Image (cartoon, rainbow, N blue to C red):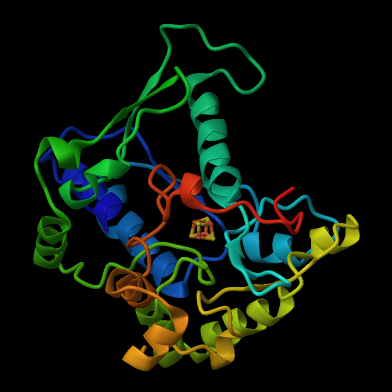
Length: 292
Ligand code: SF4
């Protein structure tokens, strides 16, 4: 939503025209996101002469299930053998989004890896973060990228972005994140189930396939001491309580009203490379060896 707004503001000349727009594709976005991206490219970016560069480090779904592939783990919900809940470490954002963007930026600057980039050479990278999520705004961790947050400079909230996109006929801008991201709330799981049966089958099958962790964890001999799930309840997705959480269920899960809100709505709107969902530091390390 915020990235689409930024691109559109730039294409319409409300803020300066960017040289490029980069989309990091994990290979497992909802169909609606790819359709939206095609539309943005055709109707907004191309007429303004802004190239949309799609970069990718592979397909996160296939890689998770491929024992021959070094896999950067997704933040899966874990049930330890003793019943304690946990999560695997999230490495997917860095691997599937940040790495390919940095690679492309280096190419654009004329210093592909492993060339050393001179100190004075850098890109200004505009990141779509709105005022309601200002805490997600961060500096880049490399000298050749300098982050700017034009929506914050303009004091635009998410609601402002929605209003603006709606005025241009883009009200249906979907949230970007992997189809089977474990950070989804119930609302997102229901939306997939109720609007896209084939995508629902896809995530249910994936959920069943990762019960013992990703495929690589098995072949590397890491002993799996528990089970992995896509849904927070740590119940198979096909049976997870995604329709509602009654107060009795809430009490059984021992969660607060705030946690129930996260259960319903997920952690954040979407997964942008520089403001991915969740807080990596808050994730508890697992004792399954899945994150290695
Ligand atoms: S959307 Fe979820 S699974 Fe996909 S890269 Fe972001 S955190 Fe990982």
